[in-house]
Every structure is written in C-alpha cells, then in structure tokens.
Image (cartoon, rainbow, N blue to C red):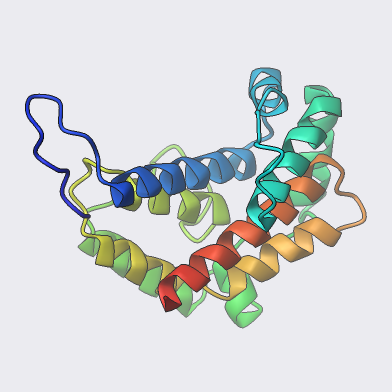
Amino acid sequence: MTPTLETGPNPMPTRNAVEDALRADTYALLGALLASPPRQDLLDWLADLDVDADHGTRLADGWRALSGAATVAVAGEVLDEYQQLFVGLGKGEIVPYGSWYKTGYLMEQPLVELRADLRRLGLEADPESHEPEDHVAALCEVMSLLLRPGENYAREQGQDFFERHLKGWCVRFFEDLRTCPSARFYRAVGGFGAVFIGAESLRLQA
C-alpha cells in the first residue's frame, strides 16, 4: 500500500489509499449481500445512494441499478429470493463456490490452494461458518481486508490473491446471477458485481 503523505498531525491519504479504501468498501458490500440476505436497513441505505448523474461509467450505471433495485425491494421478499438462488432444497440455482466454477466439483484442489494461501496471510476461517472458504462472499471479505488501508498488507498481496482466487470465474458467477430467471434484486447485484470484478481484472493488467 502506498504510504500517506506526511503533512503534519493529520496527514491526508494519497489518492491510491482513498481508491483502495473505496474498493475495500465495495468488496465488503458484495460480501455482505452474498453471505446472507440483506436486512431492510441495508436495502434502505442502498436506495438512498446518490450516484452522480453525470458520471456515465459502467460502474456508475451499476451503482444506479443496484440502488434502484433496492428502492423497490422488500427484505422479506429478498430473503425468499436469496433462499431460492443460493440454498434451495439441497442446492440453489446458483452455486457460489470457486471450486465449482473452476473444476465443476465442490471441495476440489482450488480450495486446498486457497486454504494454504489464507494460512500464509495469517487468516483463519470463521469457526461459526459452515461454508467452505471458497464461497464468493468469503473471498470478497478477504479482498476487502487485504485492500483496507491500515491492515498492513502489501498491495501486491491483494493483487496476487485476486489473480489466484477470483479472476476469471468470479465474473462468470456474477453474470450467471445477473441472468438467473429467479433473480430480481440479485439481478442488479449480479450486474454490478460483474462490472466491478471486470474492472478489477483490468486494473491488474494496467
């Protein structure tokens, strides 16, 4: 991470630090939306987002679509939608695991490699979680931590983690979510996530 500029007792963060904080917040939001159905207060917060109308990027369009979907969403209905998409009777319509997208099977070699990398980073799985570590929500949460200014992770560590564990398949996951017939609120989540992760991939190539 780029160090802050020393300007006295209250140093201003560099542009890179501000951008990394915004990216970390976005990963945290995606992680929260994918880990469990959002409560009404989160939906209300999304609905109240003020996205600059003159900002015509695809990411800004994704923010507006997500905010618009939250405006008409009701927490109880989103709960039912989440259950149908990700839980279902035995298996939901969308399988949100890296191993599945990379190999077609659950709990395969990609999960083994992920666990080894998490140990090297000093990170442990939540003992209260029943999901394997390659759940897309957990991966977004790790990216949020690695990018967060003040967490003392080098920028290269976040880039390497993304390259090894999210790049490629994660965009496909969000596109599948966007086009899933049962998705309503989560259609906007899928569209936003696909654009954001695509932008992250391009950032690595710059």
